[in-house]
Image 1 (cartoon, rainbow, N blue to C red):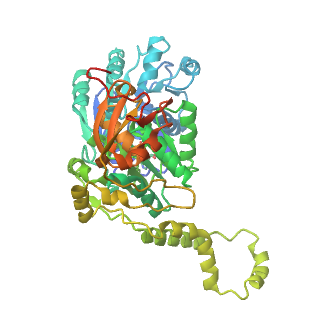
Image 2 (image 1 turned 90 degrees about the horizontal axis):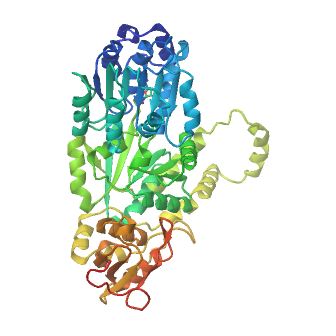
Image 3 (image 1 turned 135 degrees about the horizontal axis):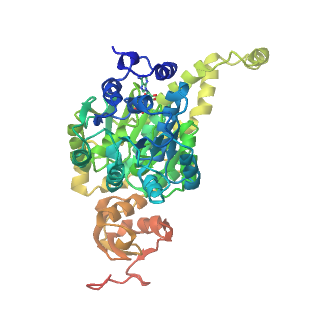
Length: 570
Ligand code: AMP
């Protein structure tokens, strides 16, 4: 196995990496460092997150930077603020024994004035997000005239986030660029195009398989019905008592609502999505990072670049449309040699999409049964008992109390003490799961759904975690034809028919089968719905907020503003 010394990096850097516990270079480091040390060669490193990319470019950059020249010589561009800060933090650690080299992070959402001041101090390495960098270029607050080395980190994510023009602008505005180093987990055609246009005969290194999910990740999935998604999520969380995870949703609304719902039901969760201010975002991330928050629920865009160590589970509440997004999501776990689990909740109609993800990832995905209520209780019970047994009683004044305790418990057997402890901890749990239903989509229920429009599933009443809380979904009876509902939401609110349908179904927890025709206009829509389900939908939507606007929904045929739209109206 190679050593850092053999790769030729500066002894002061080796001293720092030693202290960080890096014994041998990772695969990407082994292949990238010698090339990058030459300083004049373009380079493409295709590697998943967590493979040690930061050191792969950070160490050679520090080695070749001219510490005596006090102007920006290297520019690292990355997709998010979190990643930006992470890179700077690591570079700071690497350069611990070097003097005269400064590195600065510039990113959106923080004071540009302070960043401009930092830049004026004569830094050599600038780590930036594309948007803020462009802003600084336009204000002439940063001079790229003498940038020799440009690193594009997580290039695929930057393109996914719509930064392609910005990246090209940056590359065009670095006239004396000698080397461009591009790191990416995947190689979509757009990246190929950028590399062809701006790089000269790059040395390409692939670590693992491109487009392959990280092998240290166990990919699992559960198949359920669309309306059992939320309950399945809860069961997964309950079945994994030590979970420290990120749940991904497709929309901001989902992230916010599921977070609120789970919080109400006693879970330790918060949401991260684009509607938060930078301050709110920092607060949530801070709590998640220091593990005072066990679960984070996020949209893809909001979670990009987040690099949190020790994530045990990634849960796809819904599958992403894009296979690459699946890779990005799952890459949040299974990092730095740890094993991670990526769980997807899939419903029957998504199976084709799932098979596609499985094929492209070229990994074995394991279908598991959604745990029963009994499974969950057993798991929680033993987790608690393990915790009880491993509790540290070495430094406390417990000995003092033992005689008194012995007296108090004189007539209670050890078994009874254990039962009492368990009862205190578990009664609520056991009650909640007492008559819990099977959430797995079985062959029979698939048939039922197809043949009977899903009403058998819908007719069942859900269990509740505790009195007065939790599930408010009610049974309804089918039949009696359609009602027509009016709602003051339309295409101007950013909805397409499919997303609108998903939105009203998610809000009301009803199934698609209850819906008839949907007529969408700019500002309003008309929804045909089974008479028996109409009130549930109205109750779930009327008066709620959507993007700060109050939703108004009522029966279109019972007067009010709802009238049948005329042709061409909207
Ligand atoms: P990265 O892919 O740069 O985000 O690195 C993932 C994690 O691996 C970070 O926590 C690094 O500190 C760690 N790491 C990077 N290189 C090595 C190495 N050669 N030996 C041990 N850990 C490493």
